[in-house]
Length: 198
Image 1 (cartoon, one colour):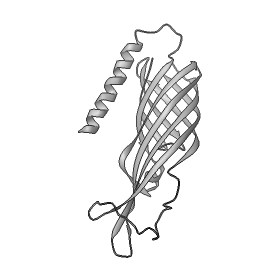
Image 2 (cartoon, one colour):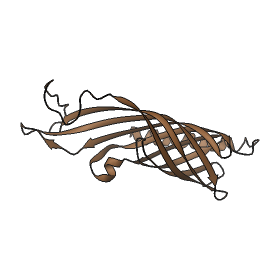
Image 3 (cartoon, helix red, strand yellow):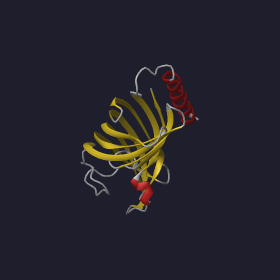
Image 4 (spheres, helix red, strand yellow):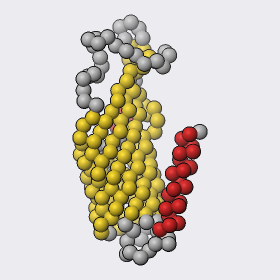
């Protein structure tokens, strides 16, 4: 129910943005863009894990010229590993919550009036929180301090990253459309969703 309300609010914001942009066409190109979407993670595609929730992403961009712009990006994903059996017979799985934020530089090239392709790179920061759970009851599983673990408990919770991406946008109207994007280093490898420009 909460997810549905959030989706409805996002769609309403995009439609409102689209109507505002129709009233403001003084410049020869749209300078501000807002995109929201979901995607597929590498681990989910390969079958190593499942999405506990669909990855979500959002970005707000500014075009300095018709072909070049910068945008802020945020992506969030929650992955559950395949269960594994501990020595005491308990079935355990690992959950990884990942947040990626960054600054993107992108080049755009119109193909037709309503379709454009783009590509670029992002410098960002990725943070993750890894937790183990008991599959039988859903409670958090706590290991002995010096006991063996399937992951490094002392690994840093975050790290800087860089990534590349390519994508395409098709506009159903002059200022409202859809996008599909492929990239590495973000919260998901394949992204798709809605985009609006002002």
